[in-house]
Image (tube, rainbow, N blue to C red; front, top):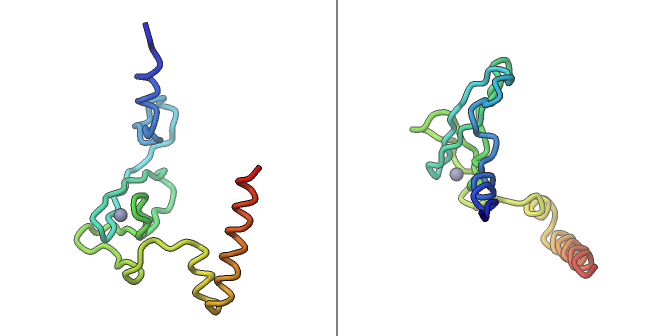
Length: 113
Ligand SMILES: [Zn+2]
């Protein structure tokens, strides 16, 4: 038999979403969040953990809220911003470009190894 493929297939992307199969997990509750794009994410929290009001959508990075009809507004209309984008915004454009160039250069050097 050529096993393996089926097993790999179920493992990829399965993630920690399985209901407590082992039975030794602390009781958890599943909370649904919706982002402005209508994506639903359902992280689970332990019963005594504080459930955050917002949860970043794992698909598009927008903040999600627990009210499906009224998700938190996207921070402006821009797509998901990288940390670098924030840095660039805070500084002058010239500074930002220098940082970007430096970062790219470092990345390139690392790839050459
Ligand atoms: Zn989303």
